[in-house]
Image 1 (cartoon, rainbow, N blue to C red):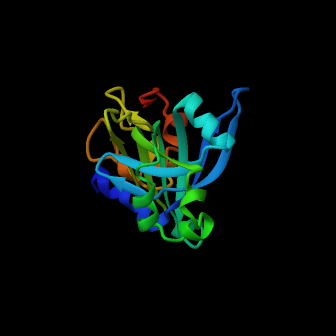
Image 2 (cartoon, helix red, strand yellow):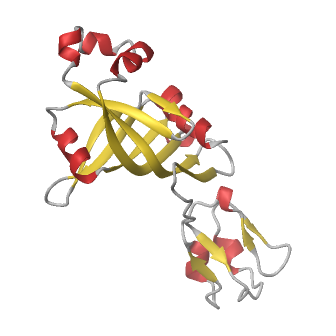
Length: 206
């Protein structure tokens, strides 16, 4: 999938997200926020200027969120994003209301909508995690000027091919055709079993 497809999936297929920001004491605070629009490199949402959420966004200019879709754990897709935000103001409000008409029931008049402002998530990193597939599917992406930052585990040239890691991998995503073995990152749970059992410390955490 492309970055735009990931962002569009958040808006069109999931829509409601749980967003985390940080308060003045450095503690996390969460709230439910609808992602209302996306383009090739950013996401858009709105909030009221009277909310504490608005204050935290402007002070920190950063957030993280997770969006999930599925009937239960084994049918779920989760997309997580962390990135920089900036306030755009009121100009995009009419466009977002046209794309999200249910908002007209919450803020029915032009006057009441003046309490609102739009924020853009313009740079960040994300992760796609699909538990509905076997083996599981995961992918990372970056947008704006952010660079992808790989996570998880990697098998180095110190591997001796002992197969200890094969026995403990829950997704059978370690390829042992040659030495060093290789982890299929797109199917890895990041559980750390291979890292724990390797007798020669050939597995490193990225």
